[in-house]
Every structure is written in C-alpha cells, then in structure tokens.
Length: 321
Image 1 (cartoon, rainbow, N blue to C red):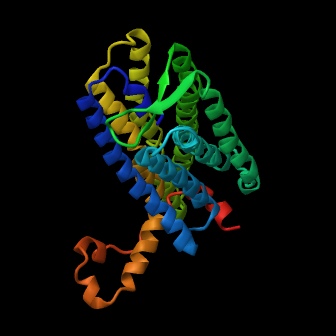
Image 2: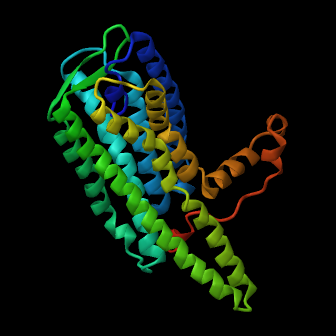
Image 3: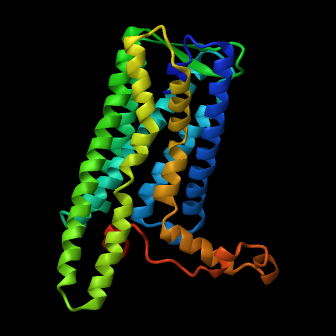
C-alpha cells in the first residue's frame, strides 16, 4: 500500500495494529462508496453516458485500490508483489482519472469542443499506461516482505533510494494532478461566471435560469481538487518528515496519513458519483416500491421530487449526441 507501507517502519507493534485498523476501516468505507457507484453504472442504463462513464472508471479504480488495501497478501513471493503494486497502480489511476474529468470539462466549456468522446482511447492509454510505467519504476529499490504479527499484509521495506523513487513516481505526479485540476476548474468557473454576468443583462429569463443552474453545479466542481489535497497533504508531509528524520515516526501524523488516503474513494464517490443523475434514478426506483415498503422510507426521501438535470452540465452536448 502506497501509504501504509511507508509509515510502518520504526513503530511499535501496538501502533502498527492501530494503523492497520484505521486503514481497514477507512478502506472499507471507500470500497462500499465506490462499489455503489460502479453498481449504479452497471445496473442503470440511464447512467451509461460518456460523462458518467468517466466517473465509473474513477470509481472502479478507487474500488480496486480499496480492495487490495484491505485484503493484504496471504503468502510471499509473486502474490506479495502483486498486492503491493496493485495498490500503487490503482491509486495512481484514480487521481489520473480526475485529471481526465477536469480536462473534459475544460475542453467542453472553455474551448467549446464536442470531440471528447473521440478521445476516449487516448484517455485510457494515458491513465493505464502512465500508471503501469510509474508502478514499474517505483519497484526500483524496494524489497517486498511481510510484517509479522499483524496478519496478512504485504509491505515494502524502502531504503533512501527507494523513498526518493517512490516520491518521484507517486507524489510528484499526484501534486501535478492537483495543480492541473485546480487551474482547470478555475478557468471553467471563470468562464461560467462571465456567462452568468452576461445572462443578467438579457431579458430572456429562461436563459438566465439555465446559466445560474450551470453556475451552481460547476461551483460545486470547483471544490473537487480539495479532495486530493485533503487526502494526501498529511501523506506528503509524512514523507518529507521521513526524509529529514528517517528514524523518527510521528504517530498521529501517520494515523492522519493512512486514514485520509484510505478515505479518498469515499470522498470521490460522494463528490463525483452521487450527482443529480444518480439521485434521480434512485428516486425513480424508490417510487416503484410497494406502498407498504415506502412507509418505512425516511420522509425526506419520499417528499423530495426528481432533482435537476445532471450536475455534469458542461457535458450535456456530448450526452445528447
């Protein structure tokens, strides 16, 4: 595991067990959240549009990352390497898919292009190819083994060389993705801000309402880069501290490092996956339940009508094609 492996060294057995429990609990929540989004995409044909397909691959990466973070490894050798590299691979694929979503929004809203669906093969090559290359390079200087006394867990003993390579192959691309997403969403929101101001001077109230609805939805997307920042800031600080004082571990920082990183899938599933399209499909299915079952539902679910159009508003032109 990209995070748990790096923080285990020089900690007591009790501290390690606590970190294992934090990782398992947080990863389980992410597994459930991302698995729910994957299930929605597979079960509901209404969601099988290009815009939500990108969210599906993001959730799929999160789900597999969480799964491999939980299961550990029952034996040494090949399966140990497979478990360690799988978490690195799918974690990197996850934040790379967020850059694809940001790029797609920017290309549609700012550049007014309608060819994003044609770029899907390039998207897959970029995400999966980059993840494979970075995962292979990260293996240099690593020695996979077991942490005895803590159950089935494959971890990585990294020397100074391995730590440097891991930082370059994981944290440098990660923060590059964060910066890219931040700049991209800033440009998208600024574009819609200008459109909203123009709409204020237009007497067509329908156009004004559409522009304001778009702005409300995209304002929410502006907070999405904060998911990666919140999930990996403590991990980055922990890695830098480990460079400066390799023999001293700060336990509370390690807990935040492991816990926040493992919750990334849950945060992504809530922010990207539970948009108005998903909620609308769920409400429609709930309305089909027998009356006796609907009585047991919370009043909020029964009283709320179908929400507005998809919050992926900038991709409406692609979904209508």
